[in-house]
Amino acid sequence: MKPLLLRLGLLWLAVFSAQGAAPTLSWTNNLLTWRDDRLPGGKLEVWYLEAFLRPGARDRDWGQSVVRHKTQQIAVSPDGRELRFRTQVDPGVEMIHAVGIVDDGLDLEFELTHRGTEPSPIQWFQPACIRVAGFTGRGQLDYIGRSFVLTTNGLTSLDRLSRTTHALYLGGQVFLPPWTLPADANPRPLAADRITGGLIGCFSSDDRWILATASDRTHELFEGVYVCLHSDPLIGGLKPGEVRRIRQRLYLVPNDVPALLKRYRRDFPPRVDGGF
Image (cartoon, rainbow, N blue to C red):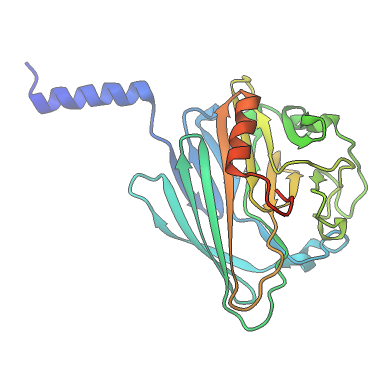
């Protein structure tokens, strides 16, 4: 007969193997890797963080719009399910942020504090460039057929929108809410359709899952040029001493659109000013 501890160890190994490895997060060289057996290929990569931008980015060289920043990881939970970071943004802005695994995806929280003496020019930022080639099973030319935003027609596939091709930088498509001035948008082509919600996402290659993201202060949604999707939050500038908190979610849920929309509306109800 096997010793009790050995038998318990073998039992635990069998249970663990049946359930699959526990989801974890890691971050190296600005690349966040989320490992989860529910994801096609077992992982999702996110460029985290990408950029902070000044107003007037639409018709200006990208390098003139970007505000310099530097991010360092400051903590990781023992189970690998939560990472904490500190980002220094010129001039004088500190952002403490965390990414954590929850039952239906990732929860991202940002707290920006302006410690400088002059107003900060930061208008918006790109926290997460979500690489979805492996999830959708598609490439740059056709992944839009499995990706969506919310319009007056409800959940709408990106290949069914009024797309444009004129911009300082070609490729991709930018989707704006009513309050974002085109002059302050990403210098990529602007879709003629305006979005009616802050959710952008895609369907998995086997149609079993939806991956989607949203924040509580939408500046723009973006279909990028690395088979990627973005929900880019508005900051709107910061006064000396001002603190701003922003929340973002990345959902990984079964392919049930009404359930996803219900969850999104619960997490991000319309604001009193009509924003999302």
